[in-house]
Length: 497
Image (cartoon, rainbow, N blue to C red; front, side, top):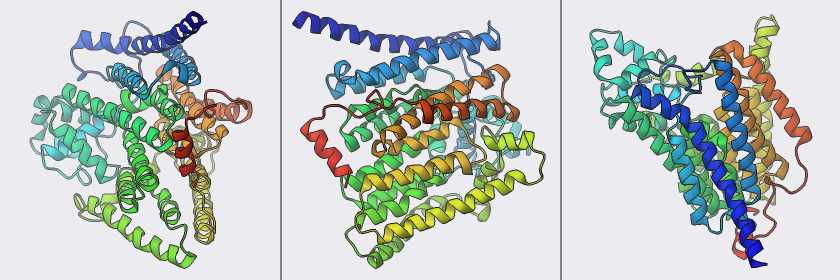
């Protein structure tokens, strides 16, 4: 009997090996590129799978095949997590190893990291305020073009599509870019490696925070081994992973340390990277003072709301000269990409239709959000899980209906709260995140262009429809653990308060 059990466990371990081999296959094109070119400086095929000897269609097929293998094995690992990982140390080490493999992969699906680094270099080395001066403004003024030859970080940012745009993110992110670019010595290869290493660390920190919040391997693996997270968080080096960290830290200090001030500090830092995080603020404050009367809750909301605003304002003091410091937010919202707004623009020749639709959704959203917060003020029994379900719905609506410049990596915003959602919602978030990576194959075939957002949106909408109507209903890789330890049970009970 013991021999059969040992053989079964050994067979299960093969799953981990297959996943690691899939990650290596994913990295091989990038390894070949780096060996041939010795530098990332001349890499300009942002939507190409780094296979110079094959055409776009063949590269896309290879990409989809490897991604499909990773996705299937990912779900198998989640399903068999208790047999595969006997302890947390083993689980964290495996996630770290896979993360380091993806660290090698060139950011072939997005060039944003080069803009991040260029802005950081503009700030750290040349003393320019990136909220008022663009990379191209600086380079093309006076004799500054000479810096392009000796500063490959600045040169790469100058070439980027966003090079003529002032910073579109909050100041916390700008400071992070400034630090990374500042210690890169103007070398784009060092800068990219440093940024990727930092994102790997952030990814592992997120895994740790998720376990501290839930006490369950399930949610750590749903996030930590998700191919979507590896691609968007580590390969493409998107800053949304830092927002996830700040939100998770905020919830950790709220629930586990009972420290509202530190919780609000982290939420303010998240908002000072991407502003959507502010939607959590009233829910956190009211939950903390759930034993108070409505009038007391309202006063606490005002007091701690002012603290929140003060912290965010302090971060902006690093760069603010006038109201133009906020223009980047508007720049983001004025762009259209990869959602149903693209379809309206392309197929319905009605003036101002997109603007009117977006404004209508925004108005309805604000009204519903406001009254939800008012009701919460007067609610007698407040359960954290139930309120987080509401916030997740607001995040979903904000993501898919309000943002005109939707991007696949924004789906990362939904992950910090999935541990308090219903099983179907958890399934939806995980599945739609993975579907977005398959939908991105449209850009691998055709290259970057706003019209390609239409077929991308079609595949996303089809995926959402299938997830909502054909998703598994019984226990499975996305469901809860069948057995929990006494400590895990107590941890989850605390989160249900």
